[in-house]
Image (cartoon, rainbow, N blue to C red):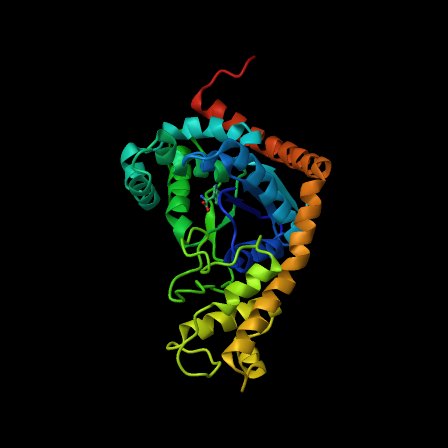
Length: 331
Ligand code: TRP
């Protein structure tokens, strides 16, 4: 396992929920010990849907600070901002000549987003998977941790790598999906048969990492529970099961242990305990994030170091690509 490169990126759009935290972010922190990790803030992907410029910049810094607050170790993981490493755009252009319009048009996310943003079906939206392939291939990535929604994009990255290698000779490592340890699957507090989402219109459905203590507790108090009064995980009790899952994820215990703890208790006490547990767990992360956001000098020097490391690795691959395709690179 030692020495393998793991690559991931996250868009600086929208607020993260406790679902993202218990799944992706915490998992990532545990991976940085075993792999050579690159983690990008994908601001170039973000602008494929309309963004408020000042907000995009702020969210970029917020997300970096959040990752650091959650325990990303700058010694072990190269954390950087995608637009600060020009090779992403440069490799995208080369790969554009290898990617087919037809395969891009067939992508599920492109079709979904075209429907959702019918007034803004831009070229970037269609090219999104090629940019993502460039991200991954630039670093000769072995493994990409992906959730279900990004699997098709990773397939395209693999296809483009193989196609390029066949056409121009061995250039890219072909990345494999990294199937994450099953993180806790956290559902909406209002409709517990749906995944908790950052874009849910019902503000009581999702708990955000940025919610203050009172908000967190209020949302849990309003969480839907099921009929009956037993605090037990089961198919028929999706609301209670979800709350038990959340409790277990934030207390680092099993659902069975959580059930035992609440045996004989009422729903009211139970919901309050879950809310307090989550609020207690978020408090130190939020405080550290606030501290970092106030220390712009530290964060920017940190990002500069990330940019330099990423730049060096990316330059190596891009110059190989330019040579393979026949670009003149000076004598
Ligand atoms: N498209 C990914 C998402 O929205 C973010 C992303 C961009 C990414 N580039 C990547 C993920 C490369 C993994 C690898 O979640």
